[in-house]
Amino acid sequence: MVERLARAMFLAEHPNSEWSAGRARPVWFFRAETALEALREPTAEMLSAADSAIPRFEADLDGTRLMGVDGALEAWQAMIDAALAQPSSSGEG
Image (tube, rainbow, N blue to C red; front, side, top):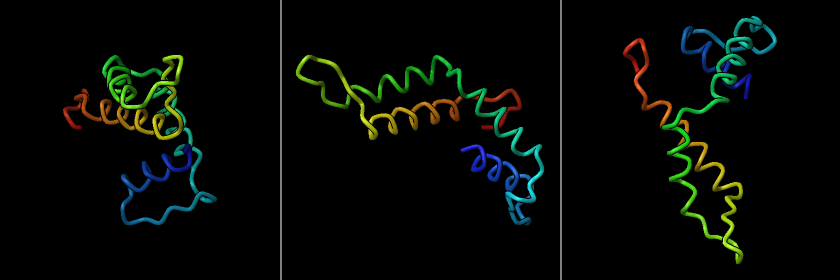
């Protein structure tokens, strides 16, 4: 995930360049790690979005809701969507 994020950030800034993990500067990996660390603490909106995604999954016989892989993916995507929907301080996305 760190490399995927580093590549996306690099290509967003240098759209006409070719990504090469072997030649990538450590700064791109540092930026990606920093971004992922920031995502580690979700906002209230992200938690609410994940919580809203979970009830669509059936409960066990004892009433416990187990998300499984599909549920975890849906909750994760709901959280990221909520983060992207929040206005940034720069006024973009």
